[in-house]
Amino acid sequence: MTDPLKQLTTTLKTHDPAGHVRADPLVMSATLQSVIAASIRESPKTTRSWQKWLTLIPVTALLVGAAVFAPVIMHPEEIGPMTVGPAKALAFTRNGDYIDVRILDPDADPERYRQDFAAYGLSVDLKMKPASPSLVGALVSVSARQRMVVFHGDGFEIKDGTNSRRIKKIEGTDCGRTWCLAGVSIPVDLHSPFEVTFGRAALPGERYEITGDPTARGEILEGMKPANKTVGEVRIMLQQRHATVSRYYKAPPEPAGRGGSGLDVTEHPLQAEDVPDTWYVHEALGGPEKGTVRLIVAPRPAADPH
Image 1 (spheres, rainbow, N blue to C red):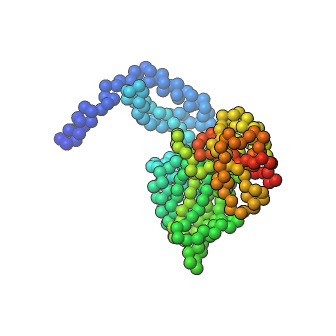
Image 2: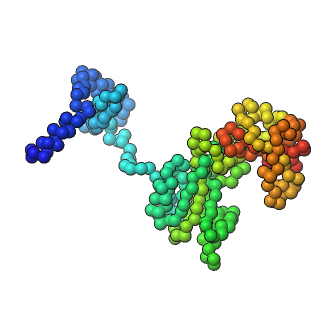
Image 3: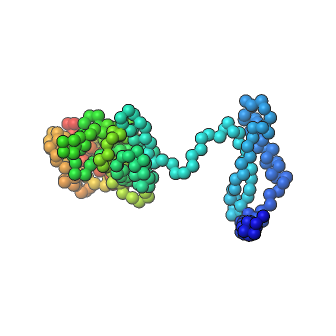
């Protein structure tokens, strides 16, 4: 053994945090036999001796601050495929001239999304914004800077002068009355940049930037139908779910407010003390904080409740 190698060996032994640990042979033997017995009972399908089929893999376990070495016994046929390195944030599936893209990890670092897209030659800026539960992991918008995005029944068209490319939408996510998608299908030869936004879980104390249908899956009023119930009835429903009203709005005249006139109900806020229990709820919207909703109300029931 050369002098440098001897010096390295001595250094490693000197600084080994588990160098003083000595496992009890009797305990290790008993543990080994019990694991072997359990393995044989659970896997009777093999007719060969267990000695030929078992693989001993040493691993280090940290127990109450002490490093302890123990054997892990596994059947080779029970070892599945292993992946080394960071997991993918996105799922890509080639579909003819398109690549289907779905979110895998809504909480991943944005840099990982860019790396995943770049690996497929796509210039996509994926934004993740805090969203209410029904929109976590769902695509909620598509945009392109200095270009026009035209929405169609089956997807989006990005127009750049006389050129245009179609991005197809992937259905499969239930967000109640809020628009959302499970993913998008992008042409493989689309190299111009565009932006897609997905919802992610809000951090503790973080406000929602994207609010969903409060009656949708996972939301505070899941399964309930507040539309055309009195304000008093809805207040009781909210109390049962430990929820509160963050803001009231006066419903616009019908049918103008529901016929695409562009009226913004948030322009007509009301104080809670000015909303009697006898008024009617026309629509419930998600609130900016967990456990809150916004209510659109009026003295009369809605002709077209939502």
